[in-house]
Length: 285
Length: 232
Image (tube, rainbow over all chains, first blue to last red; front, top):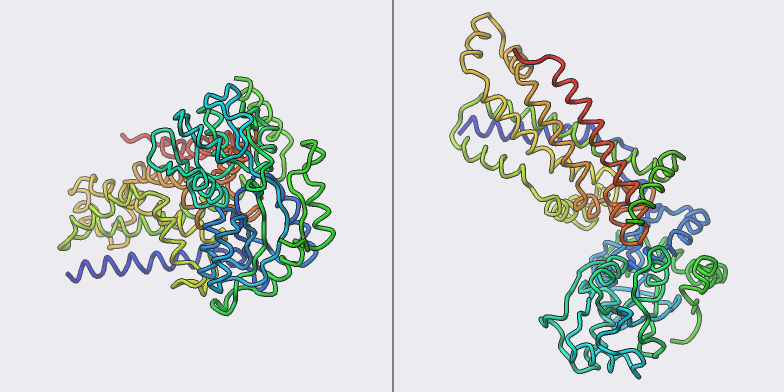
C-alpha cells in the first residue's frame, strides 16, 4: 500500500509542478477589471457583426472582450451563474424571465431583424404564399416534410417553439422533425444539404447564402410574429461579486450609442445589398 | 467540386500571403499543443516509468485506469475542466477560464494518459534481465532509470507523437475552456468549426490544410529522430 501511495503522490506532484512551471504567466488572464466576458448568440458572431464592433469597443475603452458565442439560452445560463458579465441575446420571453428572477439589470433594446421560414426551391409542402408562419408550419407537418430545428435552446429555437405552439402542433419526436443542436450557420448548412425547411434569422441567412449558394428560398416572411429582437443585458453583480460591472455597463452603453447604432445600420449593406440588422436603441419595445 | 477547388486555391493564397490572422491562429495552436505535450511528457514518462518499475498492490487497477484514460473523450475533459475553472468554481480564483492556459491544462489532461500508457507498455517490454545487467554493472537507481528510458526511447517517441497528435487535432475541450476568443484562444480546430458555421469554407479548408501540415511535419521530425538509430 505504501508503494501505491508513493506512486500517487509522485504523480500528483509531477502534475502540479509542471503545470505551474510551464504555463507562461502572461497567459494567465490579465487583471480582472480588464477582462469582459460577453456571452452572445451565434447569429451575431456568424454574421460577422461582432468582428466589426468589438475591436472598436476595445480600442475606445481598453477592455479585453472575450466573446463566447453560444445560443441565447446558454448565454443566459452563464449569466445566471455569474460566468458572463454582459449578454447580447435575442430571446425576449426567456429574457423577461431572466430579468424577473433578478439575474440581470438594465435590459436595453439594441437592434432587430427578422426570422425567415426557408425551404427548398421546389417547396414540397407548398407553403409559399402562406398567410402566416403558423399556417406554413401546419402544412409542413401535414405533408411530413423535413424540418430542421436548432434544438439548442437558442433564441431562434425559442422562436420556433413559440410558432409551433401557435400552430397547435407538438413536433418533437415526429419523423420529419430533426434537431441539429448546432448554431445557426451550421443548421443552415444541414438544411441546405438535406433540402429541409427551417427558421433562420435574416442576418445569418444572407451572410451565409452570399458565400455559398444554399439552395434555400425565403418562403414566408414579414409577419410581426417573426420579428427578431436583440437586447443587451448587464449581469446583476449583487449575486456574483466577480462580475465586471463597469465593463458590462461600458459595453451596454457602447451598443446603444449613436455611432455604434449607425455602424449597425450600415453593416452588410456593401456586401449583401441590404442591411442585416436594424438599429433600435431608445425606441419603445 | 468547385467548392473544394476554390477552397484549395484560397488556402494556398492565405498560406502564401502569410495572412497574419491565420498565422497567429496556427502559431497559437502549435504553442498550446506543444506545451501541453511537454507537460504530459514530464508527467507521463515520469509516472509511467515509476508504475512500470515498481510493484505494489492495485497496480493492475491503476494500469487499467491509465489505459482507459488513453481514450478519454476531449469533451468530457473540457466539461470538467471548465466546471473547475469557472470563476465561481473551485479554482475560479486563478481566473484561467477562456485563456490559453486553460486549453493547455485541458490538453495536458488528455495527453498525459496517452503518454503514460505507452510509457508503461514500453518499459514493461524491456527484458527483465536488462535491469539485472545494468544493476550488476554498478549503476545507481537514477542511472538505472535513465538507462531504461534511453533503451525504450523508440516506443516512447511513439508516445510523444500520439500525445501531440491527440491534442492538436482536438476541438471539444479547446472550444469549451478556451471559448474561441479571436486573437487569444482561437486555435486551428476551433477556427475551422467557426469558419464552417459561417460558410467560409475556403478559410476552413486553409486552416485544415495547415493542421494537416503541422501534424505531418512534427511526425516527420519525430519519426526521423526515432529511426535515426535502428534497433539492432
